[in-house]
Image 1 (tube, rainbow, N blue to C red):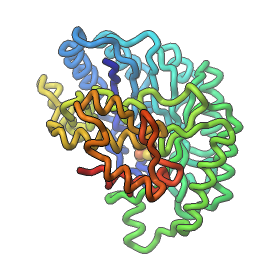
Image 2: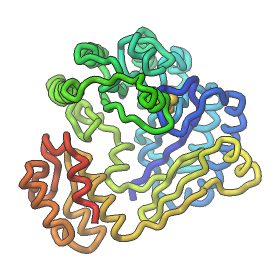
Image 3: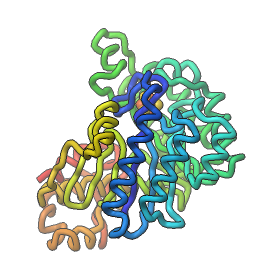
Length: 379
Ligand code: SF4
């Protein structure tokens, strides 16, 4: 059975103003101890499942900012992974990287280490906007990072961009997207700003100091990107993800297609197909638990049949392919229609869902108002 590995590196140089991911600034002094603990967890998990699994099809090192770690630390992690787990020779091996945290020499070393896909957090190519959202890099550094990655031999590069940012205009978004088109990259993720509690932006909102684009502007931004990316060959394969044909993120597709994954590192989540596990988030506690040879898994959630059906449906609906009816029936022993006939009918009537012979998928309008559909699929 196909499966993937996710590794979490929870360090960042500075906390971006919109970010509520489990990542921490000012903890550089724990990076070495964290790397040692992570390698310990990798080898313990590898001993447990390594001999019983077929090779991992994808590996994704995310964060946080993995490129905050030194090359020797990253090398130790990748070597530990290769020693502990069978990894397919043609595995997609992604690392997230932030411009300004990785130089030409390091990119070359990462390529030599076997990383074959990089995902750069860029968000915008506008310097004023980058400062406004708390990014640590400039547009020039982002351009340089992409160019250096290409020189280093990476042929599968992704950029993250954002829209709906404070003070952002449609023109600024267009410039950033046009710049991305000019770089010869293979994959673009575009996320709308979400105001998450506990972030700098949430505090600014509470103090009345956050001015966001109007609803019409945000909608015009959404419409612009959903039209312009496919026009430039980047086909939408998930609500926020666009790729040249053949460059869809295999790892992330796994999350939406019910593929099991093993998460390693502080705050990492795992999914076995029947159970979800979450590791402890606090870096020091994670290090201490591993030093004491204890499991860092804090929470275990047994997935009931009802939850499994809901998740299967609304995760698959995020992709343009939608729900695979046969896969649903194979997993649950009953046809999709026997559970969701009415929901499908209601959403079809609203023009949000389309049913084909083998799949049920969101329409273009449904992609825009996905949350309405996802709610319908809650049992
Ligand atoms: S670099 Fe990424 S993980 Fe780190 S604070 Fe910014 S958005 Fe969050």
